[in-house]
Amino acid sequence: MLFQFSRHLGRAVRSNRHVPPIRSFSNVLHDLSSRGFIQQVTSPTELENALCSRQVIYCGVDPSASSLHVGNLVPLMCLLHFQLGGHTIIPLIGGATGLVGDPSGRKTEREPVNVAQVERNVDLLTENIRAFFRRGFLYAKSRLLSVSGVTSDPEVKSNLEWHKNFTMLEFLREVGVHARINTMLSKESVKTRLESSSGISFTEFTYQLLQAYDFYHLHSAFGCTVQIGGSDQWGNIVAGLEFINRLNLSKSSEDQKAFGITTPLLTTSSGEKFGKSAGNAIWLDPQLTSIFDFYQYFLKVEDFEVERYLKIFTLLPLSEIEMIMEAHQSEPDQRIPQRRLAAEVTELVHGAQGVQRAETMTKVVFRHPNSKDHTLDAQSLIDAFTGDPRMSLCEETELMSVPLVKLASKYGLVPSTSAARHLVQSKGLYFNGHVVQDVHFTLKKNDLLDGRAVMVRAGKDKVIILAAAGN
Image 1 (cartoon, helix red, strand yellow):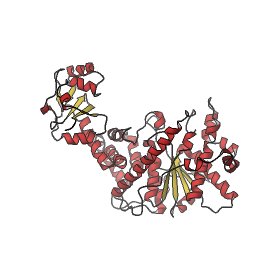
Image 2 (spheres, rainbow, N blue to C red):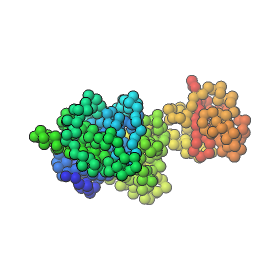
Image 3 (tube, one colour):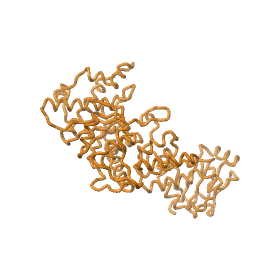
Image 4 (tube, one colour):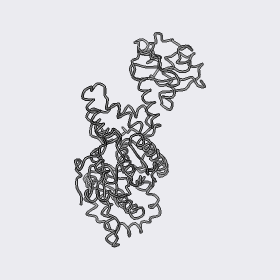
């Protein structure tokens, strides 16, 4: 039943134009494979045949954080491809399973969660997911020939809907009776924890049954036939398939066969799982990761990763990605694929206006300290940095009465006024491209861009924007 899915199974359909046509039902799996989305798949030939007609596909989202992060983009982009291919998708938030905790990929048990926080996270993630697909739909419209018949807002669900009224006795009679302990013990996530000093609790041990029931419920109630998850979810997905098969067999059901797909896990350059628990997450919420920092993350992707990321995180046709990489071979210093990647993913997540803001901010932050770029105006600067922690509003009287070294310290450019003075002495503090010559220097009206704002820089890449409130 279970096979590794070959990445060379079929070729992605290419148009003679740079803009590809909307994918038909039958070639979504080929497209995903050629883009590197597929790690494993169950019954690949049968799944290909099933995907010739409309299917319902779901993917789970862990509610242990209040926002999606870049690691979530891989399965969500996979869902987006299916949606654009005419299939129905269900993003499922683990409002119930998040209270238990998934042991997959973990060496120790999760800390007990706050129920109220999980409920709040479910609400925030619901809006996060809706926003992603709304913007993803707009992004797709600008990249594909047609997205007719595709709705931008999938129905986001929480598994608390069906678990909250499930009593223990009901669960044991309806679910537990079909579970086999030897099968549960054979799952990699369980074996790994049993071999550790901390072991595994009964709560986490039964997590696979909860997720298995999710798949069964979606299968029976909504006709869901495919589950997508990261490669660490393989055991849980297989548990769901086995549970569906057992119940369908016991009920002599003629329901459609179910399938599982896993996607590669996004990892850091050191090989660690890239996610919120590692403390290095890049969040999709601009309040947690600014649009500038989000853009910069993709702009700084290493050469050996950039082609893979272009295939996974964008809807650019493969032929265009090949041309981008060829151009990169000719001019590697220009970082052409990284710039394209950063622009594409930022537009996908934050919209076209987000790209404009990020590019303006990048131009400001990384231009030469002595550059006096007269094309930069106060309004463009304020629009680009609004909502970013690097910009602060302050009274005009403060701007023009407090020495710049004190403003630099107060608004977080440097840790202290003393540090700012040292920068002045070493010619390392700038305002609007001018070197600050005197530790007592105070701004005047004509020092401000359009009389409204000033960009203060420490060294090469640390800046703050101070704008006069009310102007």
